[in-house]
Length: 292
Ligand code: GUN
Image 1 (cartoon, rainbow, N blue to C red):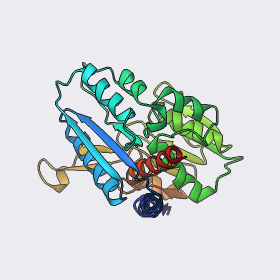
Image 2: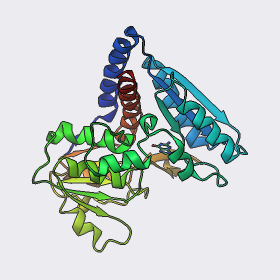
Image 3: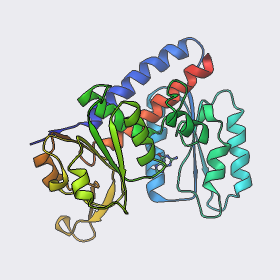
Image 4: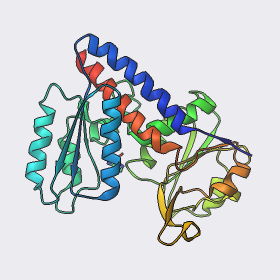
């Protein structure tokens, strides 16, 4: 049976480290500041944003949350981001996605100052990651956290290892592939048009599932001994728990995959907590860079 990778405890260690460094920085007169912006009332987004704000307070950050009505205009949101860009007390800006349909999310992301873009979604940060300029980039939180879990298992040099990333999103799949490549893994990105996905997955020493399809990756897709990182968070009906009940599952069928994998992240308690921890780490790094 596979080792279960305890993302919750690794995330707690990261947050503890951030808290200590933030206290040191604060003693030198710089308190890391994170602004989280949410537009509208998407229930999942509200939960994520509340967790981000709570953890940032735990870290001793200056934590600001802007909650805007769903009807907020694109121009007003641009104006808020520009105000935060110019605010010296703010080192990290996160605009929660998805945004309401009348707002161009791409335009908003490109308005965020790259040095404060703690999501790592701005073209400048995407380009830095793609070209290996990791010392000055801000890296997207979910792949960054996944990479930390992979490093703890395999070390920083993944030479000779085959990594397969299932999913090609800008938020997870593509940055994940670039991080693995920067660590010398041999990387393949698979997606809905890939031929014989099970066979490809079976070639992976490191398998990252980020497709948003509940339990799509089956146990017999997993190479014996492989490290499986499940980025999916899917809520599915659970009639066995009672009428109207639901449960969270990943993109990997955990019960079958854990029989073949060498190590695997659970859902919940795997990659999820790492995402918030890395947001804190990115905000701290940004504050250090701003402090010079
Ligand atoms: N919505 C879902 N995941 C994310 C994320 O990582 N960042 C932002 N800004 N919004 C999200």
